[in-house]
Length: 108
Image 1 (spheres, rainbow, N blue to C red):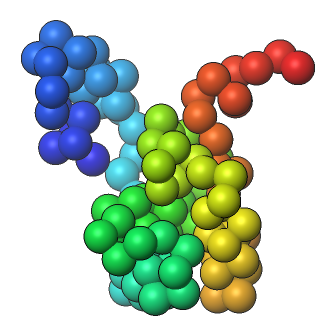
Image 2 (cartoon, rainbow, N blue to C red; image 1 turned 90 degrees about the horizontal axis):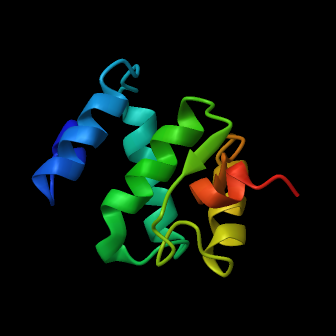
Image 3 (cartoon, one colour; image 1 turned 45 degrees about the vertical axis):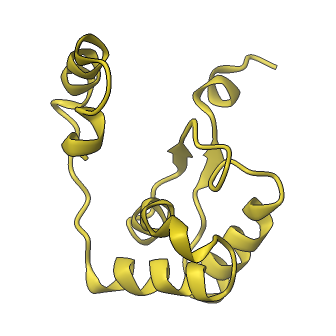
């Protein structure tokens, strides 16, 4: 998690790293890896989006309520979201609510 947060503009990276410093890290278990593969195999995400499938899988396997992302290409995508949710449920996991931070913070 910290490697991705440390990328890009140094000042912005420092702010991101400070913001996540006290967060608990979720473990990449065999169940996470299996669900990520199943998301790709089922076509819920394109094969090249393994990192995105991993983010979804780790959230679902660990029972997270929300997966916040600005990645609207593969994760917070209205076309892919139903496929992602279906694969998670077929595999016995409640899918996280996938949304952008703006959607979560909306008061409406």
